[in-house]
Amino acid sequence: MKKLVTLVSLMICMWSCDSQKENTQDKFTCVDVEKQIRYCEKQLRKSVENLDPQQKKLPRNIEHGEATWSCSHWSGWTAGFYPGILWYMYEATNDNYWKEKATEWTLVLDSNKCRDWKDHDLGFVMYCSYGNAYRLTKDTSWLSPIYMAADTLMTLFNPQVGTILSWPWMKRKKGWPHNTIIDNMMNLEMLMFVAQMKNDERYRQVAIQHANMTKQHHFRDDFTTYHVIVYDSARPVPLQKVTFQGYADNSMWARGQAWAIYGFTMMYRFTKQKEYLVQAQKAADVYLERLPEDYIPYWDFMAPNIPHEERDASAAAITASALIELADHSEEPLRQKYFQSSQKMLATLSSEEYLADDKNHAFLLHSVGFKPAGGEIDMPIIYADYYYLEALLRTKQFKEKYPNSCM
Ligand code: GLY
Image 1 (cartoon, protein in one colour):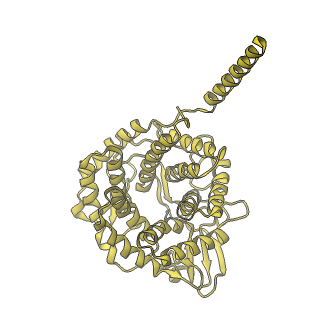
Image 2 (tube, protein in one colour):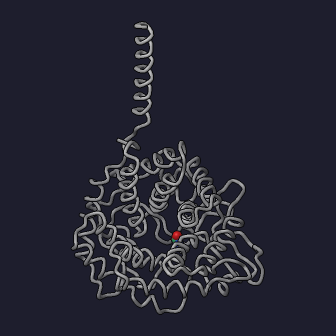
Image 3 (cartoon, helix red, strand yellow):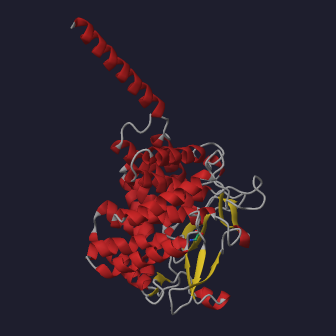
């Protein structure tokens, strides 16, 4: 009997030592969220003290050799990111100073609620700003501008095709009768939110149809994405599959793939439709397989002069943020895979090479906006900062939910 007890205790000890070993091996170091948020706060204080909301222009990029943000019009596609960053900083610090600044800068966008459509980007503009304002304050006065913008976005939906028209001006400029870009997945978040708030199926149906068509036509067999699908305007039939901001029609433009991962993860959050989750996972898997060792993509995965091509910190930040949510929706071992990958991305972004620090007012250096047109190459761009801070906050929430996920 004594022998049996000893044997069982020995087995229990071996099992527990083994599982302890496994746990320690599984654990890895997460980005130091608190340290990086303090860094972002220091940078943000510099910019907010230097900018004047009365000018009605919002930070977009920092030119080479400059320290301060170049700003663009309140209706531009990047206009919502700076107010969004200020809201995230309020969320991170709970400091009313940031709430006041966020409120002030969000109101700069007010005229977007009643402007006519220009393109599909109203979702980026109004949801990153007003959406976060409502999420954090629950003050219902933030809602009506979002509702109005959603109604405007809905007018770009073509029911004969089943997608939202991304770029109306491309009809004339390029002869693209109805065009939809992969980025457009991001603007569905505003529609899904409004559907939920107003309990109105119309917004949800448009978003779902758009996502389904995107799933069907934007992906190649290997789950890399086309940037632009040009459709016949009277039938759900693709006429061309091309790029605008990527290297080539058949290449994987890094930010486009990032929008796809983020967009389908977000659609899964709202619908719980398994096919969206699987699409996000496949899009993430091919992106991860083809990344360089430091987890920051070249601006296009097939850019011709790799390794002498620019990296795109914005794509890395968007993907890092998306992967944390994707990890949360996924089962093990994918959960660990996506979360650890996000942390590797954030680790490199949080290194001296990528932090702007004393060089300028941004959080991050080295983003690429539109290389084929020679625009915004290797500079700080506002949306990289937005998704970087979002990813830091998501890391914090993930660690709270899964305390053993990292050290
Ligand atoms: N939505 C435009 C871009 O990603 O550059």
